Image (cartoon, rainbow, N blue to C red; front, side):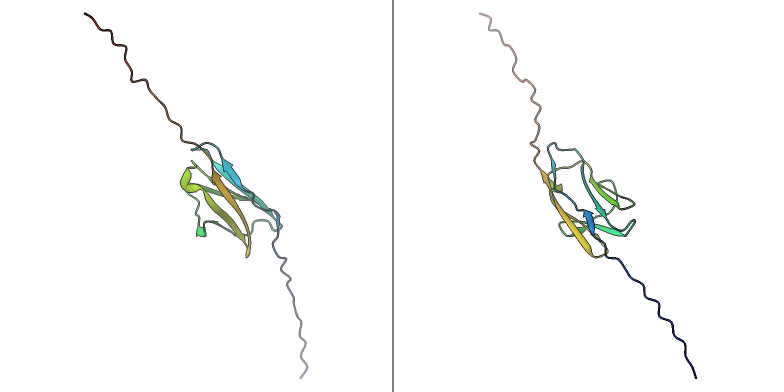
Length: 119
């Protein structure tokens, strides 16, 4: 008996970040904050995290990918959104921090009235 065997080898190129995430600062409450990065593989599956917890696309988070560019926008930022954000693509991770430096804005109405004393 004669066997003829052929071996097919697939090479998987590792994903690398050509532009990793960068820290983001927000100066005004209610503004959006956007994290962006670029990887070597287009349209690879990605997972976004905040402080180690999985994020999902929805009213608070806009998650998008165009080719090799990945984007996370945190809408209507407040103090609770500050923290560590990460993206994981094919086991490779990039991290950045969101800092909320906004001071609360107060609107003051005048409560003083002119009072005239009459004798």
